[in-house]
Amino acid sequence: MNFQLHNYQPDTEDLKTVVIKGLQHSPKQLHPKFFYDEIGSKLFDQICQQPEYYIPTVEQEIFAQYADEMIECISSNCVIIEPGAGSTKKIRFLLERMQKNLPTMYVPMDISAEHLQRSAQQLANDYPELSVHAVCVDHTKPFQLPDEIPAHRRVLFYPGSSLGNFKPHEAIDFLQELRNQGGDDSALLIGIDTKKDSDVLNHAYNDAAEVTAAFNLNLLTRINSELGTKIAVDRFAHHAFYNKAKSRIEMHLVSKQEQTLHILQHEFHFDAGETIHTENSYKYSVNEFQTLVTKAGWVCDHVWLDDKHYFGVYFLRAAK
Ligand SMILES: C[S@@+](CC[C@H](N)C(=O)[O-])C[C@H]1O[C@@H](n2cnc3c(N)ncnc32)[C@H](O)[C@@H]1O
Image (cartoon, rainbow, N blue to C red):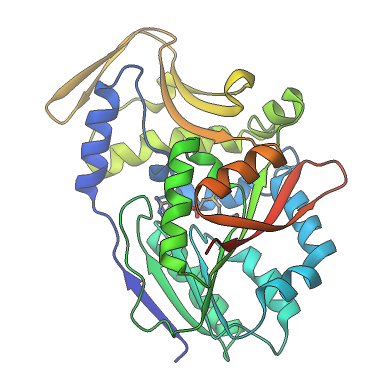
């Protein structure tokens, strides 16, 4: 058998603590990692198919154009570790082109247990000669990788601009953690969104089919189902906009009216129009991103951009 699941899944207690703390905070906030229950993961996959959400298409274009160069950088006889692997679609693109020089092991990591198990198992079925060790973990907390990982070069793969969900100082901490987990010989192939016209960004996070809205609102549905609360989800609306001064998309849930939420033994008052801040997605120029990764102990060897410079894929090497 070439597939194994290591489940270190965070529990409901964590959601409870985060919800209480986040709604006591001023302004109210929730952590985006809780978007990804089984329904949220499926909704994210649907977001990736919306025409306004350009990230997957543009990133794919860059992979298609520069796959050979990327694979040369990665080199064979390595272990590929992918935090936030989700549906494992993007690694397939590289694996197809690696042909006979597959990595010695692929380690997809994700917080969304069922989604990870399904997608990683399918990948293992499709690549019977590849050893797949899926790790269900919250990577915002200290995490351990499976003992089964062989002592080969570790190449981390972090596409989709997921790093943009961290504030810049947290992004540095996370990249340092990846550097520590990877070791002195490691590399990181990472995709990150660039700064661009506000209209393009605003449309991307406000798709006409309202899938991003459903994804944002599902956070409240998840709280109801896991914490047994009775939040009236229809009393909230999705709001996403580009905050140019902070170079980030902000996603919020806006209370449509004055209301009080009863969550466990707590009451949370909302004025009409008051929001819960649910996600940031930071955008970086090439220079800014190179400065950031340098602070985290990485050296930038390559940058690949699409023609419009909408997105960047970087190959980083651990600084000695
Ligand atoms: C923006 S999606 C990107 C998915 C995929 N890498 C792509 O590029 O399409 C973020 C992924 O990271 C996972 N994720 C979010 N927060 C996480 C956390 N704290 N620990 C582990 N995985 C997390 C989600 O479940 C989701 O699959």
